[in-house]
Amino acid sequence: MSMKISAALLSVYYKDGLEPIVRLLHQQGVTLYSTGGTQTFIEQLGIPVIPVESLTGYPSIFGGRVKTLHPAVFGGILYRRDNEGDVAQAKEHNIPAIDLTVVDLYPFEETVASGASAEDIIEKIDIGGISLIRAGAKNFQDALIVSSRTQYADLLQVLTETDGQPDLETRRRYAMEAFATTSHYDTAIHQYFAGETAQKKSELRYGENPHQKATFHGDLDAIFDKLHGKELSFNNLVDVDACVGLIDEFTPDVPTYAIIKHTNACGIASAATPAEAYAKALACDPISAFGGVVITNVPVDLATAEELNKLFMEILIAPDYAPEALDLLKSKKNRILLKRKPVELPTTLVKTILNGVLEQDKDSVTETADQFTTVTDKAPTDSEVRALEFALKVCKHTKSNTIILAKEDVLLASGVGQTSRVDALKQAIEKAHAFGFSLDGAVMASDAFFPFPDCVEIAGQAGITAVVQPGGSIRDKDSIEYCNQHGIAMVTTGVRHFKH
Image (tube, rainbow, N blue to C red; front, side, top):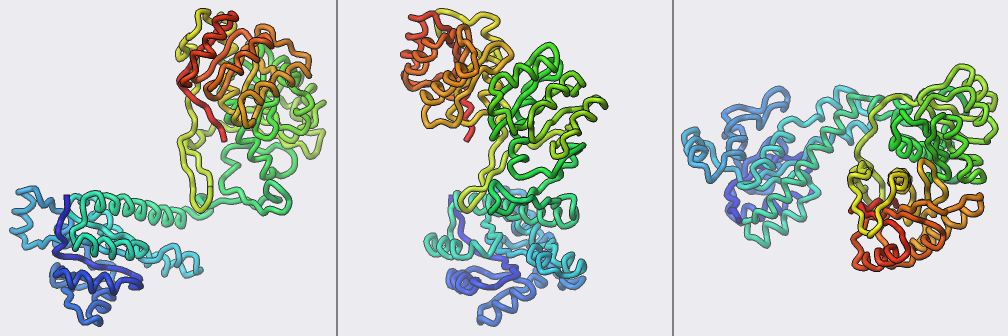
């Protein structure tokens, strides 16, 4: 659905690139309305323009703070052209249709960055312009809104190719971009007023490597009380984030300890007591645990602290520490001890990539037995089901491609970050055997489906008796058939957990 632009309102801060648009609109017979400096700019081009003051009946007042805020202007943008009541009211109050609004907001961020005075910064908070953008975007069914000078070249092309009759898809696209503009603008203003609270940042010693500079933007004090040790590094923070994500899969009614190395769990276990949970977690891979990050979901007691103190670790994270345990753990001066606070973490993840930013929802899905679909003749036992649930929690937080081998409440081994699932499985089996674990009766979790039956064949030969995977491969039947022939239980979840 196209609409013919008959009248346009132009109110911009920067005039660069505006001239060809003004000339084209004039050639297309569009009535032009404008304000202040933009009006003067158009007049100097020798093109007729109607001052907004003649439309509103009010001059620009309060030092230019109020120019366009009037029903005659906003009514012209907002009234619905297909609504008989709106059309009648517009006619009754002599409100002309404004089909195109071109706005370029006051340069608030540039003014802040320039080190200008607070008074100058406040004056660069655009009121009329931001309102015009929102109005034009809301009524995209009937009007076109241009919210930034970065769109001028595209606008010129649209006006030329459509002869001043942009279609609905184009108007909707411009509306979407308009709301992105207002969102960014308001966020910048909020950050200015919030000051250090919104912009708190910490300079780190360096990034992933000593030759890389690094900064943390955020408030660590809101999440942790740092009880002891040196400052957190870039790599520390990345591992701490991985620790928190993993341990939050486990409720504190069952003591759980996890040991993280390079964002992957090299050991994790749940048990009746904290000391037992830590001992089982350490046994998974005591070599990788050296220099790792340890996290638990229960307070650290003295008995567990005595064992923890034997391990060289970078960081220990817990919801609390017994006083005598804390005293003991502080005996290593560089060991970082963090006490976690009950703070809700963001549900959106952001990552810079190429010349932009990727944003996605946090992976908040964790499948339990209720979401399992048994696809083999043999169903998993109750013990295997609990082991499969445990393995899935770890699998979800492990770098793809990943395979997790586990028994009830304990990780046996993992294959992480491999380019093939077969390599991940072979790595996991080799690690399990290297640390003396029998895989007879163990379970296997995969972060994605099996495109071939090779993984279940290798797992079955190693002693695996139950498997969980998302399912969905066109060759699922091949893996299922092998499991049926060799007495292995397989369940599918319908949920993939890639972690790149």
